[in-house]
Image: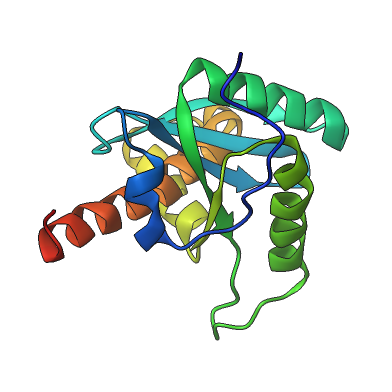
Length: 168
């Protein structure tokens, strides 16, 4: 039986993640765009974010099925979803779309979501791709997954600091 079951757990805090990732499960990161979904997955040691190919958005049910299949293949235990907060800390329509996406996914899977402030993640991802000398066309193909990796890496770094602050 796949790990993606129908018992909704919803949104949790990052402090609740370690218990959800017991047994070497990985953590996924998502960057939602209007046309694509950037995806990244951690290693089992929860140290590094690895970009995956973007998912071209079609309709929610198809996008969700592709994501859940990817999560199952990567033994994902939880998802970090980028929350596009405005620079002043307020939430606009894009943040509401991310919250709605998490709510709509909840009945489809037992995987919990952590909402992660993604301010400037796309800017940082673009700078990294420019530094790596990617052409404009190649950057456009990879930017969403690079942003998802940036979001996920921020959450992984926070998990590492939580572990140092509160050893088991």
